Length: 449
Image (tube, rainbow, N blue to C red; front, top):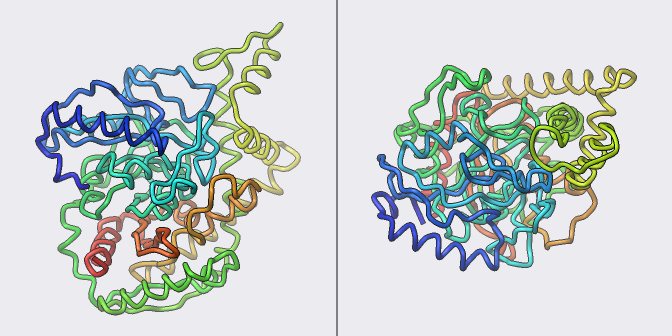
């Protein structure tokens, strides 16, 4: 299912799409809200249905972030990306399920229900954007939006067998994205082809006066097929391939991926990035610290859930205890601890220094090489309920986190299956080299068709 199948679709076809979603979603649970009677705006992509992750605000449509604390929250405005999509003619057909406040790797942390992987209903679709990934993988919509803080687009894309792209940090406005970790979050698309990823990116990217972190850069995504990549250098990171959590079958698929790139005329080089092994530890200090700050606004006073107490402190305690799930509470506590006066230098400040070191190593590598490649996820989709230990879930992000820490673009490219389950490969490129990343993705896609 592609964008081109829907361009110019009338209201009857959109109504048919909504009916199909309602039927299919009884098994998959990809959606938290299905828009029963969506408006079909005019534009070059008029009639193309799209699903939006439920942490991206939609005017007049419930936006829950997968949390009880925002269960009945209806935003009064559209996120910048939603405005741009509507202007282009896209039809928002629903809001997709997610790990609560985007904190998780399986979409089992949703406060409402887990989403199931369309490739195997007994398995997770990945997370935190599991609903968006499942909506595209199941054929309910041709494209969907997700957010990626440590791999939340690319990892579920890998586990469900679709394309998922995290753009360069600052290329897409975060205005209207409910903040998880502001220095890491980025909105990006899911699709069944590189071409559709490029089409959505061409619309949603660009400077936005409502988000001071957006860069004054406008890339031409339409030219992704025109770039000559012959003879370009592709780096494999020694420390990434030595990761002990890498599944043997995924490792074998990676070897096939490398052979495909060689056949396409690219040069493969092995490099060392010594600091990359500290990525997970660094991320799980910085991200919870930003969570502690960003989620302080959910206090039961201004919007969202309110549980009354005898005094203000009790109101805060009862509201946040009832509204937040276990993983969100865990990360708030971790972040509050690392930001406390006694531990700030020992943890948060040190993590920021290590982040800079990791980023510098990656930037240097990308001066000498056009791309860095790796598997996207070290494993294929686990069964629902199989992984409950927080540490084992955090380790699933080993390959995706470095791109967030350094702010570089990265895409998941579906690359066959292992034991009937999708496997994805990751391509990373230099900052604002997003079009080149999509160019290589497209060439791989064409080669393995």
